[in-house]
Length: 121
Ligand SMILES: [Cu+2]
Image (cartoon, rainbow, N blue to C red; front, side, top):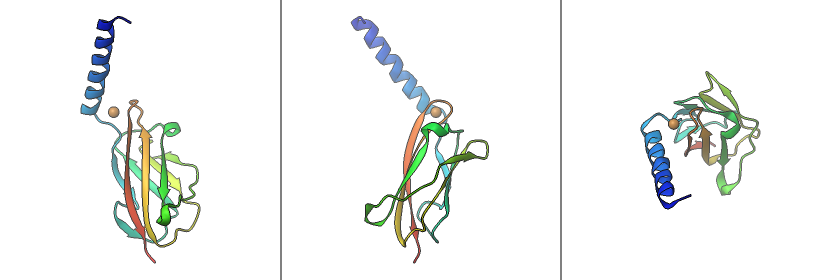
């Protein structure tokens, strides 16, 4: 690759990345449990996104008190592929939990984020 070609391709990638940000990616619209909510031990997590998701490249991890990972079931998509539903296998002990999510939307963009909830005693 010549130097000029390389500069051009870097510029192209950069402009595509910037253009991508201007358009809709899959952003987390709402969740159950909601961000910062205090709830009873949930049997599932529902994450509603603004775009349709590609399940194969989307998932969540949940970290509980003492940084322990929470056992989750197989995620599935619902409601026009915009809702990622993940079963929670175990009953959760009271405490604070962090949900880290990463998704690939069908427009090919990856997004990630996190939210927290508390399980009431
Ligand atoms: Cu996008």
